[in-house]
Length: 304
Image (cartoon, one colour):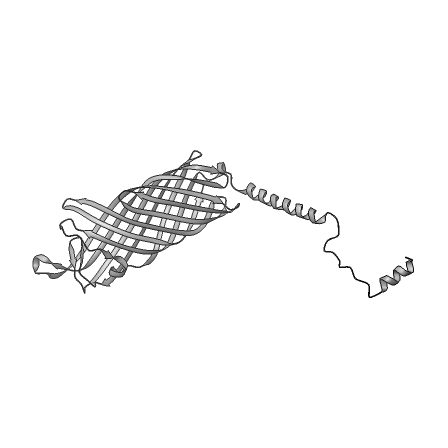
């Protein structure tokens, strides 16, 4: 074909137009794919490199925690001077205690070697309220009368001390088993009008105060997982051994604000059904306590 004919064909609007390709022909698609894979691998390697090595993690830590707790609780208190069992009372619906409240706690821990640790935690919460009793209620031997107004308070405090052994402790990951125990302290008060059986069932103003302390062994598990140089998942679970039912589980996400400070949010849930016998000179007080705590939590952790 002559040059003139080629030019005429190029100027002919009826000629089929070639669709331009997205990439020029050659090895470009494969090259870009390999480059993308290498870039991703490099980013992953950089992230792993910035995760705190296991040997450089804090040896000691202190944590302040606040839980916005939703609480359900009930108790039965048998007085030391009577053989008749007390009444099982729902604290929120019958005594007017708040269903929601703050549940602060403080904890501290220390690593011992590469795999061992020791931890302690203290938490306490006090709730109070008033209500008109819908039925007669027997608490610590006092028969509070239906239709009267009761003024009540319940404080629950726990102290947990346990040790742990990390079965796995590598860069960015740790999990292990824990063992120890906790003490439960319950301070309770119910004030109102009670019947005096020795004086013709006359209603008299009385106040029932008692403190009960129980101990229980615990076993559990814990773990952490780094999600990058600044983020970490943390969780633990504990169950009671003997002396009633106890179960606790918590899960949190932590953000490292500075090399020594972490901020976290998460969820926690605790269920306890305990049987406490407390001895007095006049006899033995018997408390059956069932409580459930659940809610979101926020905390501040300092590590050194």
